[in-house]
Length: 277
Image (cartoon, rainbow, N blue to C red):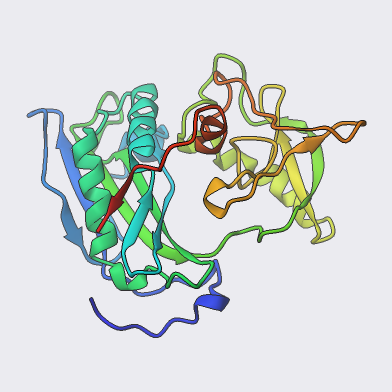
């Protein structure tokens, strides 16, 4: 593991560091086989301009985090949950669900190859992990032959800090509809939220947009629920009614993506399963 000079306290979302590369595994429909995970330098991927990933949004993704412990180990938070969810999302857009062991190995390799970019334990930063799965070869008139699973990583800090945020209800926009794809993490669910975000930009910086998704109000950067609930940071934020009684509000599972945080609140506590090395 190399030595790098990073100001962990002042990471910017607009700052991209020159990491060691990303991991790719490719599936061929003609053979029904996945390739072994491979380290690829840079962030560029060559795809067909007539691929269903570009033309029809045949894509899904995940987002998870790696943390460094005080004894120097690196933990990835609940990767099995994300392996299960990306398989479910893949099925919704006719992509081959990546096997769990392949997905976990891609995650492990992506973090291990960039281990020096996992922030120190005393920092509030983390290594963000972005797996993405999409149809990559020509497939304008039907299914394509090549599917790419790519896993990228980059250091990041919590987007909204550790304090409560104000919200503004945007009642002119529904992110998804009943019986739609709102419960899957596919790109087409997220691109349209640019409209309410532009509304947010015209408001004071202390306010944050809430969007409605199938009858549920959601934030543009956290579509899972009406509140920011981050168990990994040991904090839970909820709504209070007129009697100041707090409650966790989540959306229908048919219209909102499954939230790891809300699931955790509904199950008995047990130590998180994680990739550790």
